[in-house]
Picture 1: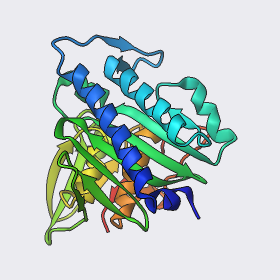
Picture 2: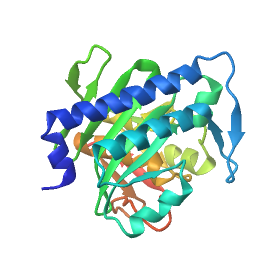
Picture 3: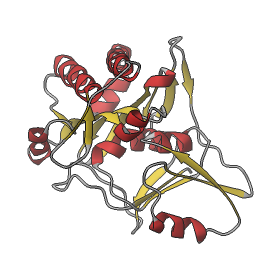
Length: 260
């Protein structure tokens, strides 16, 4: 039995993970709603805030307590990038996906947690702090959303005949993506969103396709990838092969995510 299957069959494990994501959400929102939040730059010239670091500590400490035998790889811990070389099963987190959106105060950011097993994202949790929602699921299990009233609802992809709804990044709509969009025949609707919300829009039936022809890292996509596969969607590279995780190079190839 896969670890994801084991977790999904254990209501307490799901509750514990949802509680952990809720705590990370609260820490993120405390910083987001503060009058002023300092922004630092990391060595790779990307921004990091107190929210990234606070959520990272909550998730890494919590996962270590709940699943002591499963190591965690995090965007905020360079040393953790060595873990996939010796571990086929690990947690992969982006404590604040869409830091640029967070800084712009446009609400388009998420917190991402994925379980990686043998290079596959088998279970994903994506929280939307400003909406107090947590999406979770995986291939073969279905996907759900958990709200602040502590209710669960199934989510599913649904197309609309005669229109292709393309979701693209608010911060990274480059010329290659524009060219891809322009080549699509028929009626096209462009939907812009930040962070892993682009995958969630497809999984929830609000978009059909997400072409990503710009750089992303594994922690940006893994959690939402699992949720999209939970509703029958796919995330494929430009050669039509599945995106894999735990590579030596943390960067993803360009990919196309789509519904059924």
